[in-house]
Length: 157
Image (cartoon, rainbow, N blue to C red):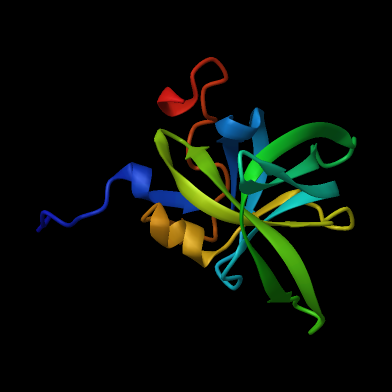
């Protein structure tokens, strides 16, 4: 018996999904879903904080793709600095930005830490806070459940 709170197909995602970060101009990036990580992370280098109209911003190069390093220069308002403890137990201070994410037909705000992920297979990691914000459930036996977000007009961006 279905209830009014039952899930639709847009609520289920796989362990890997295609995403867009339209405000950063990043389209068609493979993301690894990591329910064990609280915070989401984006592979970035050349991170430079700066001030714009009295607000703190950060300029960085986002790296896209898995085999080929394709750099894309981005700017975003700085939300905060956060100390993150990695899976190997080391702590690191990271810049935090907030931007729109498009996954399938859904779009919502997610905070990302900027970190060097060059040794990682996936350049972007979506943590549990992003999944809750998007109200998503992960089926770890599946990948690329959602359709690739549109290149022309990602979810109304």
